[in-house]
Length: 487
Ligand SMILES: Cc1ncc(COP(=O)(O)O)c(C=O)c1O
Image (cartoon, rainbow, N blue to C red; front, side):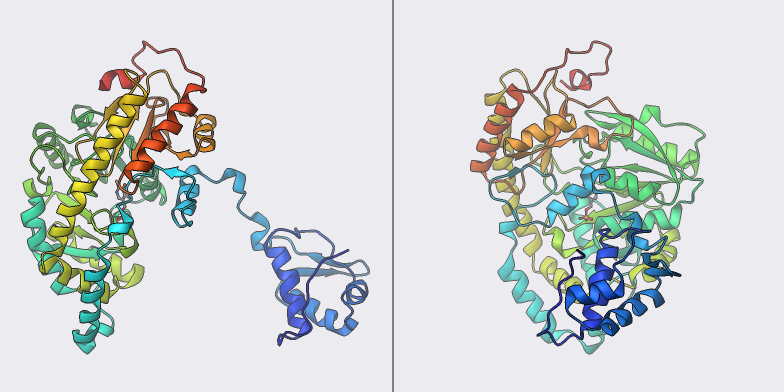
């Protein structure tokens, strides 16, 4: 029996209902290329409709190419129907799963140490609401038309001053392009600077998403290992002529190091000798808990560095607001790239953000949440040391919304991560973000920005239970167990 639901009381004609029903079975892969459809006579009998109704529905499917008719034999699902190559969910990457889960409702039971999520309950709804209402009432009529690809001039002027005082970024508002988050800034960089012959010299590990953005157009990656201070710049490859060097110097993702000045200068010298740019991704350095704030590399060489910032961590990832600060020579190309991608980032949100910064609300908000993040970070560190005395080391906890915990002798394979998940915790292996595999198997990334202290305690308790039953690996003494190097 060919199960198809039709609703006689619906306003939609029966022909269309049958057409849509069969089409959706094809698109969802329930009916595959070469499958035979029931005869029009049989389907009409099964659905208690006239045969002409089914014939008409099949005619639509035939004319749109979903099915084909074979003389004397019936109707079949056509070859090469788009969703015949439907994504095989078994092959979907863990990062895709993370993205899906990012939009799911919180499950309650599962404690999720996903990195880079700010305290969502602390979003300043009232102030943001007031300012966006103000913008809506007071903005000129032009604000409701098409804007400039670089973004609102008001926001760029305000942002320029904010970046000078908070990050030591040295620029003119004309060097700024407002983007839909740092992610779009990265995509625009790939679009403008890379071809399928390019090489990107990049920290290893680095987020899998960033690797994908850079390699999507065929460019290749040259991984440079990192240590507790970020990229090991003495290993930069001379003569490689890369499209650019990519770094997260204020807070390496994921291992958390801060690039010292000597390495910053070495990086600039390298970029000068190779004639390439440095891409500086400064995604969360506003949250620095120890030591003075670290200034940007951009402030050291504004012609060589493309600086990326984001409001995802300091305010909310839902806003999708980020920016590029560009060397003057590149500005026009990026404005074009932005225009031909999505014209511009939504103007009203940009204007609201401008007022939010100008009123001093952003700095107030950052100072407030930073206190909370510091408490959550301390709580997580203490809980881990208590639960795994002598068996855990913490890396890169001076800045940001996550740190890395290394458990020498453990290996966070997919099976172990699944066991941890069954114990009620989501934790994220560093290995998922490595280019050269096998160096960081004993480490997980633990985000604490959006996890309450109560959940942190409970999460670590569950993690201890899960790891107590996980098989331990013998410690390697060939230097491959990088946790030893980080202690
Ligand atoms: C290192 C790094 N860069 C950039 C981003 C992207 O942030 P956005 O939300 O601004 O696109 C992330 C996200 O977590 C990140 O970890």
